[in-house]
Length: 287
Image (cartoon, rainbow, N blue to C red; front, side, top):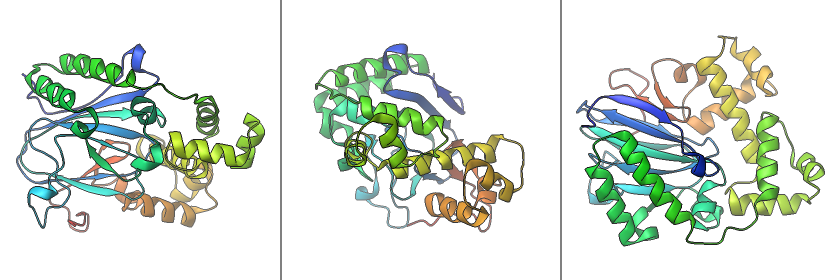
């Protein structure tokens, strides 16, 4: 039975490693209301809720506030609060920046800040897959079934060439986000406008914003896992102009301060936080 409280990150199969970054499995037996915060990390995702559906608003709880039990989300413009009432069981597919476009063939910019019921995209097969996932008794069994579904989805359209974007993504990540659009144009041999257009179509956000997100990811990782440098030193280390700039960008994108991120908040993933239920001053806005 899948009942143990856990938080696991699992790799995809080799066949799907070009689309899927990893799977995140979250299981909680606590029955209190849980508050999650999701913010941008440059990737998109697909979420399956096996116990109780996630909720978009908790203060005005009604049927329209419940999210689908299986949905996709595009690039995130501003951080989002999600809530869970009672026990929680989530399986999240985290795609590479280009993965959702490759999987669905939908221009990525059309999915910006959108949460879309999986059934509206895949019809009856989405319902069948969800029912089958519910019947699984182990995590590996769920992953295997889910991957078969993702492979079928990826075969439903002819993917366009993405080499310019893939090369640019690799360059931006390799440089830690310290890469301008003009530098990308020189590196790829394409014009800045071509790169901008392709990024919006395949990734969903402009290359400049993607680069800033990669820089923020490095800042987050250093905060969470790295040596406990002074925040001023850390800001310079990852490429911010100064600590003030790093602080403002961080607070704007996550809704919390760097010290709160490494303090009482529980990081379920780099860009997914769980707020404590009993820490004054750290409660997320319920709206």
